[in-house]
Image (cartoon, rainbow, N blue to C red; front, side, top):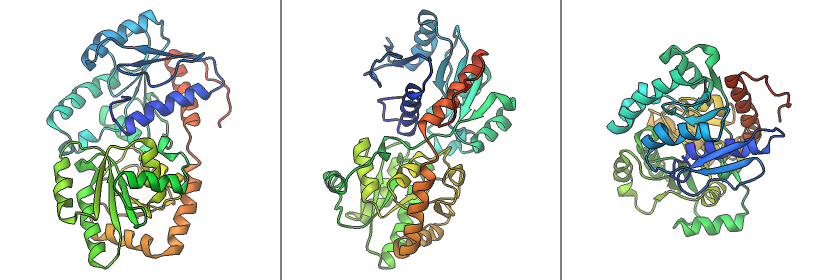
Length: 365
């Protein structure tokens, strides 16, 4: 996942690794990578280079063999388990929205997910997912015993790092965006699930009402990204598509934004919302998927299928200073309740359950 511009999936892997490394525990981490190592070697962290670039080869040969040669106690993968392993497998499945909305996926991705994920869930000793909503969906869809599926919440990614105003403005300028102009920020792959075409239509209504603001869309091209590009074509100079950006550049985008919009039709968690909150940027988001579960009362919600509902919410935050301040304060407080250390501690407990060891006694932090 790491190094392939997998956005949320990559943030998850690195977050769990950092969290596990921070625990006062005797766990040793063998971190397998195909390209450059994602982490530095340490006393308890052992990067291991895999020989094959093909995911099929990794799952059928490399990881199974490593489970023997490295004498692993547990092997943790995302979405797809290896064909065989000497040790129990813990599987993270962020969501299964491909079952309810196949139209959001390419035919290739849909075939792969539909074949591999159900098999992997059955094979795994434990399944981790990232919200109670997704946990319930996995249990119901695949008839999985309730005690096999565990919810472990994510936290904000590296883009939550603090950044000074001067540096933030310089980073934003380098992306071709004028930081002196107010802008709405949206973050995510350019794909139908992110609902960016409706956001652009809502933005057009803001312009029609005389609100002087720009729209910045941060994220790489993905399945049907052409739909977003077509929708933005008539708004040159007002809609900015940055493509993939670094964590530091993304932190700058959050820091300079007037409001963060999250119009997604479904999110299994929604890491960008927490990243925006960490910078004090007010969050306006869809009442869909796990976003209400994650954002709580720290966001202003809209109907993601209703362009006018979306536009009205954005207008309120852009024009009501009291609301903007309240959301900013509530967002910072909400984001502080999530941490990768906490997620790692809960993940480690799942590992121990999978291999039949007693749970650790470390207190929550």
